[in-house]
Image 1 (cartoon, chains in turn cyan, red):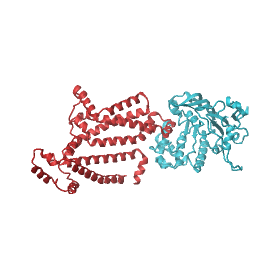
Image 2 (image 1 turned 120 degrees about the vertical axis):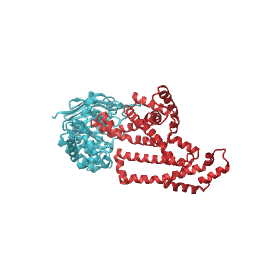
Image 3 (image 1 turned 90 degrees about the vertical axis):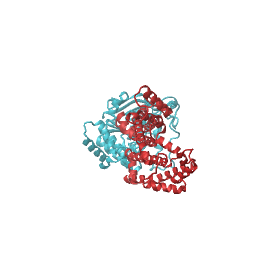
Length: 321
Length: 310
């Protein structure tokens, strides 16, 4: 087995505002090996982005707080790292692709300047010409003509902007790439292109990736392992094989797949999961999913389920004790 | 771009004609007889009537306006009723000191206002932010004449560092410029602060942070330029309005500027001088707005493409 690149142990993140405390991530455990792609799947508000921002230590200042737990990235303990150390890490060892390409680029700087900036910050031994050459190289790599480096973001379409964002993230060949719904803002044809491109680049550069998405199709196509997240916890984790073809599942995962249209079967209606995610300021006792679970037992309401492990497959549910 | 600038300058012509007509009409409709004011209360009615005839005041309103326009187009803006000097000369003998005053105040405003605004945005709710908020309130609530008098009292009378009046040298402008800048400084600080606060919450600032950029770089390279647009608007507007003269400052520091000149001209029904100075201010404001618009395109590349298309 390859070396562990990222290990998150018992991570707890809260957002503290004057009105309330949001429990965004609650006791999350996760690890990613070098070169591996892990899909992080869950509903909106499950804590996926919060997890990624915690790894970068970019939680909103004064509001977002890592309450408990440890994040070890490339043998560096991120949770205790100083701002200076983090600055050296960001963009170099770990970089992030943000959700919305439309707002993620600075409108007053050319695309080339924005890509070159990462290199200027981390590759101090490169001279100006080398930086420019690398900028052109990386633009070609993401499928944009190199001469467009002197244009501004508003001169690019959404899909092209996302390519620029990806180019910025990949410029220093990071060991870990955090892709936060990289295709959500794009239309379907561009989505496929961008995903295909990311897969290629990943193979070429041997980058590990945490792919955050709520699109199970994307996961099946690009990931090695999948983690299903619910109310700030990982409730099921396994290889793509385990999750998509296995027969033992957390009821929530079953629900997720039940919500997908299946073209091979004749069903009149989809069966979505009833109800909504619990209020993160006031999480229920016991299993966080028990309020919506159709297999809910008495024990689920009072006691937190323990993890059941079966080889590579892990489920957090009372059903599989 | 050049085409756009030319178009904007051509568009100023109808505006200026409209303004001159309005002022002419207003001066005509308000009570008071320039001839009577010039000759004084003791003059006989016959003398006043003769002067009215001589000045062409008995002609029809429109005839008089067109005569005025005809002269103006040929470069003759008329002669001041009061001083008998061509208004152009009158205007430009006053203008340098007003320009120096406006320029000095703007420099003070920019040099203090923008950095303080940026710092209080970056260190929001810190002691520095609170102090700047407090001083901004203090500055806005101090009337200019009071602040001017206080400055004269302290720095001219007690300490003797600066002269209290006059326009002879650089040193004469220090106190007036500070007084003039003070009131506008507050709004500039607040505007810079709120504009910066908005920008540093943008996604692209987070992107820059994710690249590993330090705070200095985030502010200087990524935030400031984006935050500058509304700030430049405020500076431009303030500068243009200062060119129109600053009556209170001029009175307090006994400076011969455009403000006092215009007010006196209005009181004396000195129509040519009033029109000339108002039109002058209008041109100054239009040019300032144009300059601000051109500056915009240097700051924001999105606007550059917009203008080059026109």
